[in-house]
Length: 244
Image 1: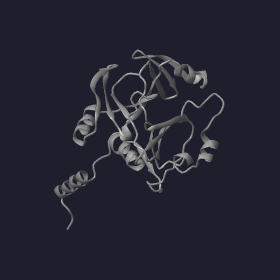
Image 2: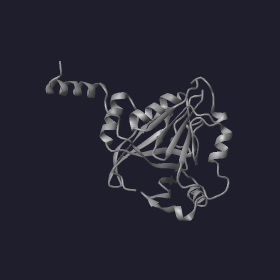
Image 3: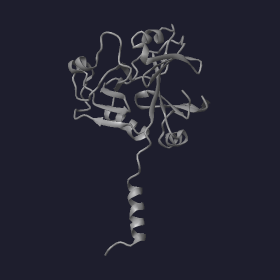
Image 4: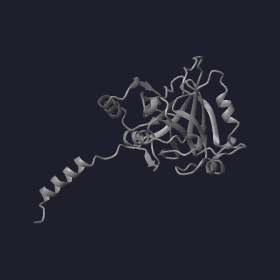
């Protein structure tokens, strides 16, 4: 029997309920550094082609734009606590999930200035790399790739990431570690920030799923901002309609 129009609508509604749409993709906004000596903006300014960078002040902070990537620095006299945070290191260059350390050396490391203004990426440590990547996919709409390796293998020293996520041209690679990680707050890389289309929805989701809210919603730059704790205690700032 051919389904009637009403039945088609009912079936479509059931399919929609069973397969919810993915969250709208967030976009990478900035990386925030704690800079007690005010050296980092000047340091990075020397590494890029002057035609591809812009140095300015934003929200009373030193800022450097390299291509589509924004670095912010704030003066901090706080002494970071002991322990490693999720941020292992970061850089500029092409990345791939299945390359080894030597292949990365050939492809991504640029030993002499200028560095490429695009292709910014972060190498992140995680006790559960696949779960961390899935979190960014499910919560922030990132594109995710997963490797075939065992979660039980320590792979950081060989530069073999277990998973990666992409927010446009920005890539985050996840490496398996065994030791618990500490919060990024107060470390050199204090937090990462993403622009999101609906901050209220994400904060409501955080409340429902037990995600820690580190800083409640507040006004900033003509929009609103809040900070949550992501996987492996990586602090994540969420911005809606905030002007750069």
